[in-house]
Image 1 (cartoon, helix red, strand yellow):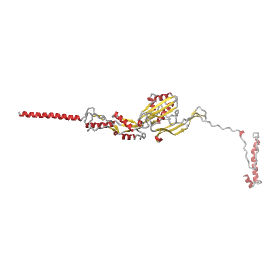
Image 2 (spheres, helix red, strand yellow; image 1 turned 135 degrees about the horizontal axis):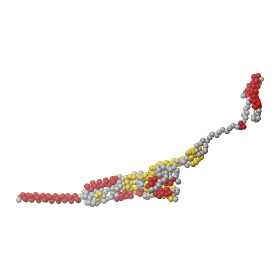
Image 3 (cartoon, one colour; image 1 turned 180 degrees about the horizontal axis):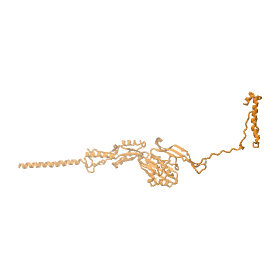
Image 4 (cartoon, one colour; image 1 turned 90 degrees about the vertical axis):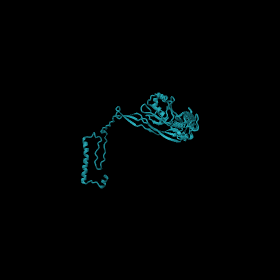
Length: 452
């Protein structure tokens, strides 16, 4: 009987312990559930349902680091770009150890000090005091919270004082009317063509892209020169340029360009982080080319220097069809030209910021062409001597000598007279010698001196 009582007590005790353990477990589970977030709870955009505060804290820190790494914030203006530090993106982080809200939805914010420092790093222009920072901060926060984990890129131009327009004419060129069917087609095809940011622009490739025929000549050189002059008056970078063989219609030296279907092209690079637009119109009034984009804070001026005029040289050709010694100028040459194009960037108060050499424009001179005969000119033969043209020679003889008689008409004189003329000088000499030997007529010293 006692044994049955002992067994009953043991069973009762074990039952009480079991029930107590169930109650304690249930109480612990209820306390645990009370420390967990309900399903659907979001804190700072992160789902934390079913997590304890400690677990939610770890998950929030992890998600914040991933968001800062993926959601970069960049500011750009023209060809300059800066990225805000990751710490500039301030995400909400409540104290989960104390507060256990059902839903916490707070927006991310931007540190205004870091934002101001980043704006000062823009190299395109001096922006101090020109940017509407509060308005810019509000726009960045709007994009950051609407597109989480997505990079945000902001163009500063709309927030700069005095640069509110999104598009304006940066440069334009006018060319007088030139009758050309292809010129009309090219202008219509490229009107509104977009120059993509950070990409090169090739005039020839753009025409091919618009299914246009590229034929080199005066019309295409005129069109290329207008596009060249417009793009040169901007911050676009020149990559390829060729000078034509002659100046295009209504184009000054230094502004000419040449494109053809072979190896010549006109290529610029767009360094900006925003696109540009090329507008081209052609009518009976002429050709107008415009470049549209974000207004510049600085001005760009084109300057021509080192101008040079090249005179034509003489080029000689030989022909068998011409007579000996014959020559003729068959083609008149033309002067050549050379000049250097510079681009000046001018800031506020007309302060020169930078001068950049763009290209050397050279148009070769066309030579004068002269045609000559291949045959040499013969030397003239000497004219024959005529006896009638001979003139008598008069010789002055010393005193004491016998002067021969001059015969007026030597043709009518007889042979005897000629012989007598030849003999007389010898006879006079003999008589003088005889007189000298005899000493009858020796000259005095004064007479010898006079004779000398």
